[in-house]
Image (cartoon, rainbow, N blue to C red):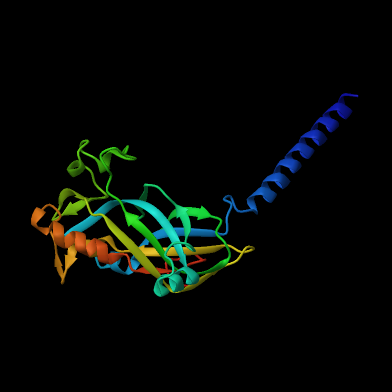
Length: 241
């Protein structure tokens, strides 16, 4: 009798374990996030390799607002003067922080459901906090006044000495995709925007000291010009498919 009880107990345990394994196997085969489109930011691997001992960047955080996809139809409307954002798709409003991974991995900003169609560009605002906005991160503020709030925070070392560079840049950015991106209702498309933070401190081959306030205008102009690469990147390797 005792042997039967042991047998049925073991059988019941086996069934429970089998159900658990099957359930987890099924759930892992599905995407953990719903949607048909993902957008990520990545550091340029090519430029990261070119860094010198003079400048080392350990952390980059960018405050972004009003992230949109632009369709071919919205572009044609804008060119004809008949409209602007009627056919754009808002992905994320914000403001929200993009912490740029400096090890070559992607920083996924959003996974979303967007209408099927062909998209040619992403648009967003580099956003400086206003006086009435609650800082999402203490690094972006040193007080309540407008001149004590920031949009980009970079940390690292320059000639071995630690620095924190804080930018008050406010800029509308438009990144045209390398090739038009086609989104369908029954697939999943991944797009990567590439930016090189080392280029922010490299002017005509000369590395700029982030601690020198006379470099601020040049650095901000370099930041504004650095958001130019975007492409479909379904294998997430940081290169266009």
